[in-house]
Each structure stands twice: as structure tokens, then as C-alpha cells.
Image 1: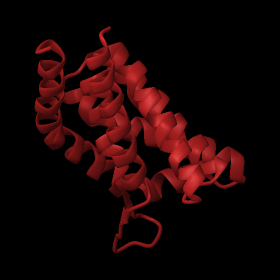
Image 2: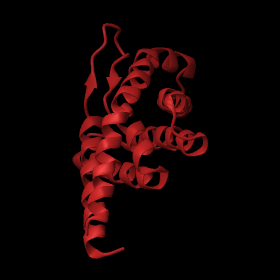
Image 3: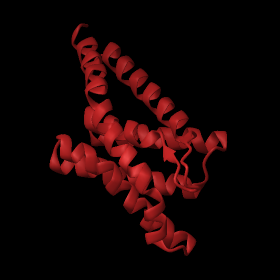
Image 4: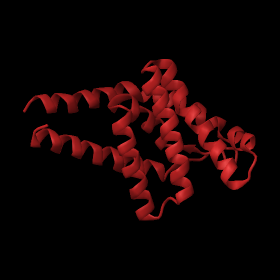
Amino acid sequence: MKNREKTIEMTTTALLATVLAVLGTFKLPSIVPGCEFQLSAPFAVCIAACFGFRRYIRIGILASAINLILGTHTIVNVTIAMIFRLVAGGILALFGINPITLALSGPLGTVAGRLVLGGISGTDSLALIAAAVPGMVFTAVAATVMYPVMKRLARREAGALTQG
């Protein structure tokens, strides 16, 4: 890979990690307490779908490091986020990118994260999953809607890499 290509890839990776970290600190409120929507989930699904599993994991690790350094997340938050990333990204990597995997990968990642959170905290995992259902629906819809836009951005990066 040439220096220009490396620079473009590193810059894009850093930008995506920063946006993911910032989105991870915001939640949209819900009318039901404890059912807020995590803004980073649909964005993360789109990153995995557009840039591939390996790069998505690198971006996620960078985002988690940013959140740890800033103090906006704890080790438990990072653990749950990484479980989400492994499951959501893994589903897309194993089963391909299509409307069904785009819609299901985020909610299944959330379910896995809530199962782990229940185990860590000693809380009923089913209650945690039930509280997350509105956010899972939001993630499924938002990821499906955001994907075409993110795909265009990924193509622009690919185009910049080939115009050297």
C-alpha cells in the first residue's frame, strides 16, 4: 500500500472511530425509563457492512479507547460494546450484507450484550433484553436506512484510493 493510500485509510479509520465514540456517548430518550436508544448501534452496523469485519473491529477498539480515555465509558461498557461488535459484525461477515442481516445484526448484537451484562451484573437478562426492545427496533430500521448513504461514503474512499 502506498503512503497516500495508507494516509487515506488511517484518516478514514480515525474519523469513523471518533464519530462512533461520540455517538456512543449519546442516547435518545424513551418514554419508558431504561429504554433509551443508543445512537452508535446503527452507525456501527453500517461501518461493519461497508468497511468489513476486521476494519470495523479496529475502529471499535479505537472508539472504545477514546471513550475510556475521556471517561465516558467503563470497562463494563467497553465489554458490552465489544460483544455487540463481535456478534453484529460477525453476522454480517458470515451471512453477507443484505436487508435481513442489516436489520438483524444490531438487535442480535444487543441481545448478546444484554446476556453478558446480565451475567456480569447478576441482573435478569430477559428484563434487560425486554428494556432494549425499542432500541433494537430503532437500530434495525436506522441501520437499514443509513446503509445506502454509508455505502456511498465508502465508495468515495475507495475512489480516492484508486486515484493516486
